Length: 93
Image (tube, rainbow, N blue to C red; front, side, top):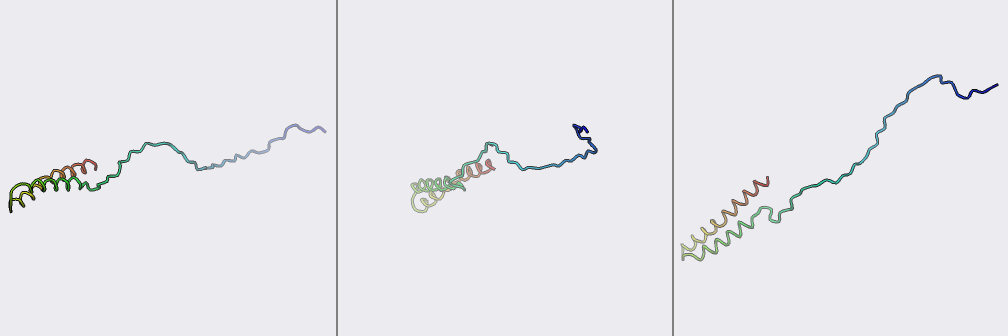
């Protein structure tokens, strides 16, 4: 008897399976971060302006006039710094 060299195919059944393998993708991304502010509320300019204005105002007048000049000097010097701080805060937002 002679043996066949190939087998006869009787039936075909397709088998398919989806395999999901998790993977990690790494990439370099440029990030822009603002450096932390040392004076978070930006009060230093107002305080320095107020002190400088008070010292200059104190040099003017005498008695009650000296007190009024000191207060006026403080306010007039501190106000621009306060306005600048508010403007800068709005621009950053």
